[in-house]
Image (cartoon, rainbow, N blue to C red; front, side, top):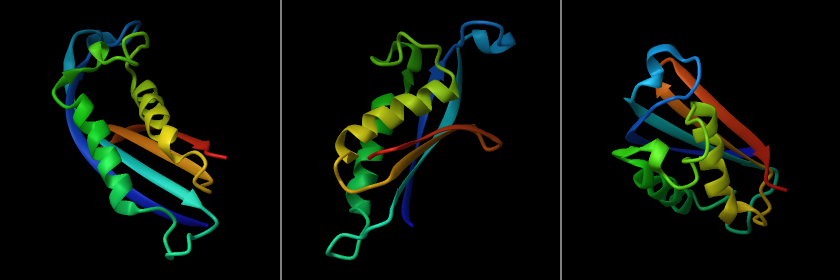
Length: 125
């Protein structure tokens, strides 16, 4: 199994609904998005996937949330903006262009702090 990894950071605010104590008030994080692609087969050029292209896609996605209130981002408006939901949103956005590329899985980790992250890993097949 091969894998490639890229990461990006973004600053964003959000507020949680439910029993989350002070996190129900608007607050911010310096988020770190980590993206891992895995697959069993290399392309003819010896790569799993173009890491530069993946990096640009991840930077674009991070940029679309940078200095935003996540509760106002289309696609996140209708969910509770937990790290799990943000990871799922990012997974869905990235997977759109990765399906059909002979890749096995995509993992997206969303770090809310240096000590805590949530992730979604799923098959691309």
